[in-house]
Length: 421
Image: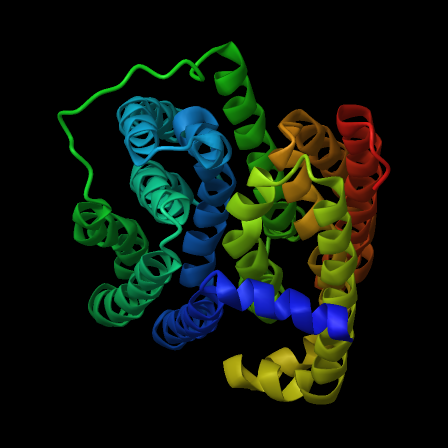
């Protein structure tokens, strides 16, 4: 227990309390925004927007071809503020151009795709504009982390979700599903405009950085592919439910049943977000990494058990908050929560540790294998069990990727640093 307390104290010393409290508030606000949309927009029409948005969500990490991930890892290794700012400027300019190109390609492709519902193509084209604004907002937050300014990072995240609630309510009330889509588009853009000046970057000052080479771009590219497949692992259930069952109400139901389990991922995200720069700086210190891993797993094993217990006791009450009819999906909620425990305890930690040692291509291999398995299992389980089948598949995949990431990390870490972990 003392080790866990020391781990928590170390986390708090890096302004982790700001990240934790604002992340909870942000998740609650995001939850509230989703609830507002459900109250104001009919399930079928909302399902069309959700379906299109899930396609965009797994493409978003490709914005900038992963240059944002390169900023996080390589920026952590730079010593001076001037170098970190120069890297940010390089990535901002290149990333915007790449993101715009991806947006144009996606919009053209969506125009020619033949969807069952014509509205899907329209919303896919409209929502594709999120790719660029999300990339800009993401690198602004990363730069705050590199500056070890977790307070501003937290404030940016909180502000985003406050604006999201305001826009979702205002625009959905007036323009229904179109307003909801517009709120998703403008929120990251406006938040970026508010916070970019707080980086205090000298925009005209440029430095030539030796770290920008083929390995830098390779790292970012595989990181983006890994994030794409990771997002697709979450989105694919909704996409396949819509494709196999051809029932947009089931798409909406699974989306809202999965909100609470997937929201629990913020617990590990908070810790990793706070600590990534720190443990990347100390990655060659095997004793530090060994102790970090032990304490993290102990802490999140307890947290996971507690989350499962809470959902078991109060899951139906939580589902009834969305819709009384959703209580029939309690089993799906329970299965997803058990699955999320695998990410909380293993995948969240070891996936990021693999990134910190430069093995983003291993994350890509892991998630690609998981994606193939996901599709196979979903085609078996969804026709047989409906959205419960999708929940079974997700739970299996979450534990599979977590354990596989653990195995890969220990294998490569021992090879790279020669010391036993």
